[in-house]
Length: 120
Image (cartoon, rainbow, N blue to C red; front, side, top):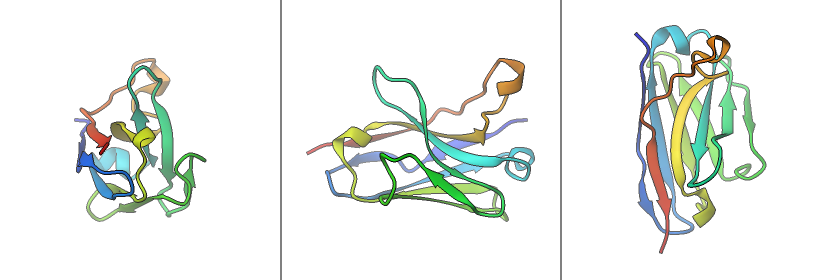
């Protein structure tokens, strides 16, 4: 059974920080690179950070230097530390493998996501 459970979102002021967590199925976590994606209102979902099993990371230009992705392979958990948050970071954040679960079958599976709101 596939499990992707995100947590840690909330309301934060500009310049603040949040740490997101993602509990994933072991079958996904041990096999694939993991990514944090986000979808802002009216926009397409985008990949903002990616980490391979050994720990190599990549970031979208919009979050580079502010966000840090990490993973604990013993807990099948991925994290996203978000610092210096901006209003444009407001979105629902999801974790998933890269490519997403089900991508090759034409039906992607996503968890419920966690909402991050950056506002005064």
